[in-house]
Image 1 (tube, rainbow, N blue to C red):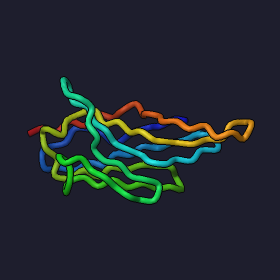
Image 2 (tube, rainbow, N blue to C red; image 1 turned 180 degrees about the vertical axis):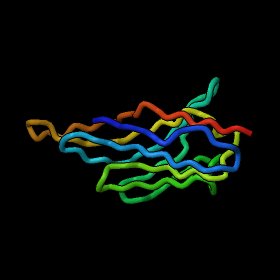
Image 3 (tube, rainbow, N blue to C red; image 1 turned 180 degrees about the horizontal axis):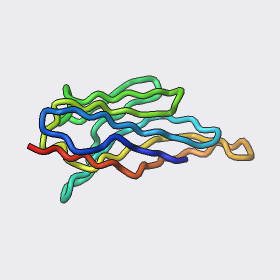
Image 4 (cartoon, rainbow, N blue to C red; image 1 turned 30 degrees about the horizontal axis):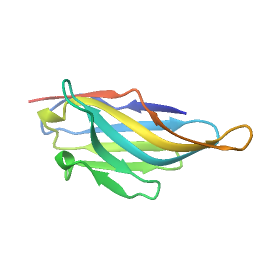
Length: 123
């Protein structure tokens, strides 16, 4: 399983960015996907999550500003970020709970993390 995050960059406060996270792998089924972020000196925090059925959950600090979505056909997760604030500056990481079927048709369950993409918001 591989997760490739992209879309980070530098943006001014009040601006917008859209992050993407593409999952790939053989015989793969993706369940819940999540965005986390980690700022320097701070603990990793959940930003948003979305199930395969489309149910979403958001961290309190981003409610009303960020929107999580996914394209199940493409196994791709998105995060639309608007009204960005300086305190949104962090490395954003995606994760995915998955099932894949090995060469013996046995289900293998796991969780994988992407490499992260840096978002820098200037005030």
